[in-house]
Image (cartoon, rainbow, N blue to C red; front, top):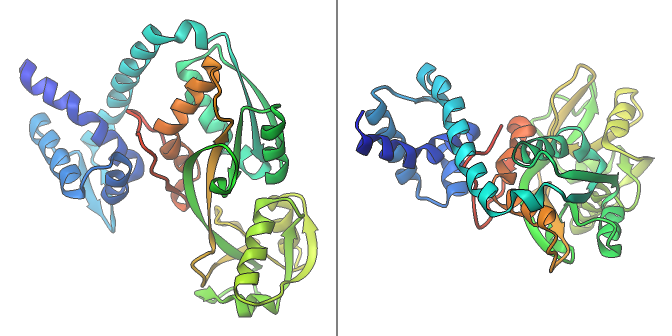
Length: 319
């Protein structure tokens, strides 16, 4: 391969990486803000330059071929190296001495927050993080008081500050195995209104979403228990004490998740930052969230979340 072909390969690698991470050409095109045919042509051109197909159709999505799987870590490493080099010249020395204070909703602490911090610290290993967690209201209160620089919450567009949307995820009804709705393909809010409902306490984003869904439909939920987190709510469902509405999750042996027949049964997760922040470490973290954050956060949750599109995309999102 001559230098001209190698330069063409390098220009196409960001497209390949985003497609590989999302496993959907349509989603990748949205993230890259490129027409879908352009993304498809880029993959074809890259395959021609390298001399072998890198992706192949699988159902409604795509999967990597053996060659694609072999190329992916090298593509990531190359793009990361470029990004790290640019960042190092610009501000690594200053950023590396800083701290980022984050408040996040408890449900995000198992996968999303660790994935974001891990990937960010691959670039800035010296940055420290101060973490607090709790309800959506508590996170936004911390942001307003100035004790946190960034809040990771549901429904971020309703909050005061700069908003960076990360991903969207569906809400599902969770019922015990053997429940009369367990075999239903989907459930209406009218059907749900007749069930003993387990909800999170007031102040949590999930509670607000459920109350909004019922209010919009002119129905009243029949609340049987209030919990502090989604894991406890699902545990109460496993014990046969009611049903709950939570984000879609990895299936387990005790419960069944049923789709909710309502367009509002989804939620967006994103970051809210205080306006005018000039702390280098915080600025770098916000730049990171704008670029690779949507794919990294959604990828940490598997197939249940869809990355949001912001103004810029990163060179090296991660699953």
